[in-house]
Length: 130
Image 1 (cartoon, rainbow, N blue to C red):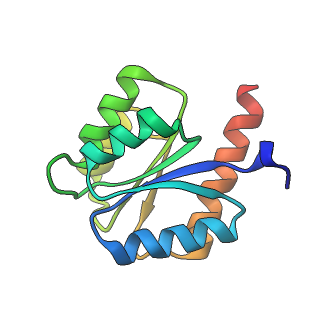
Image 2 (image 1 turned 90 degrees about the vertical axis):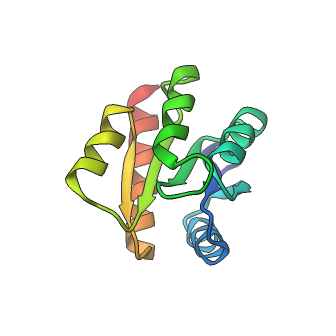
């Protein structure tokens, strides 16, 4: 896989164990983790400074939740691939994320197959967008 095919990823989750697990799973999928945020405010700052190709946002974070962060990202950029991560897959939560332009949704607990599916969807979206 060339550097052009290597997605640069931002992870935002308030739990250190989840950030580490997701980073490991993403590396196994050929991704490069460029930043790890502990809340939505930090995630938005990293989004602006690092310009990642993919963002994994936990929904339930302190200070600013993932859906509010997604909304701020979409006000600036409709294209970046943003995947919500949550143990909460209630229909109203998913609907809120979809209404803000989410690209994908992964339900915890995280697994290699779930992360693999998201990365494959990212590559599909990139190939059809170009």
